[in-house]
Image 1 (tube, helix red, strand yellow):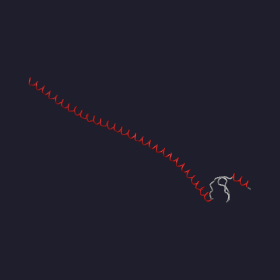
Image 2 (cartoon, one colour):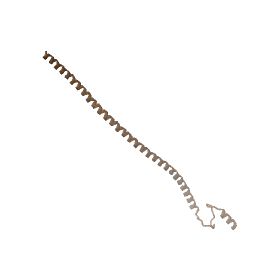
Image 3 (cartoon, helix red, strand yellow):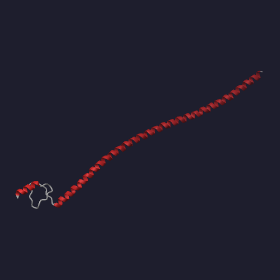
Image 4 (cartoon, helix red, strand yellow):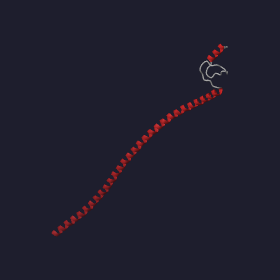
Length: 138
């Protein structure tokens, strides 16, 4: 019987149910059935939490990549806004130059018109003076 118990104890593994009064030959932890069930349930709970944690870690990696993409997009939008401001400034300068040219063009046209009037009046005065000179000399 002793040989049979020795053989059976060497074949037993963790979680085997031993009868009350069984003597262990090695250092071991001994739990009551209630404690073993509670530990088993806790292990099952921790394993499910570990699976959820791994899933959340994967989601966190995806979220970090998404944040990186948003930062890149933000930088691109900032550069695009700067480019639009630069283009707007160039357009404002072009409009200002055009308005200045248009203003000077109006002054130039008014100057030519005034010069034409003065020339016409001057030519009539000169022609009148010349005709008066011929009449007084004759």
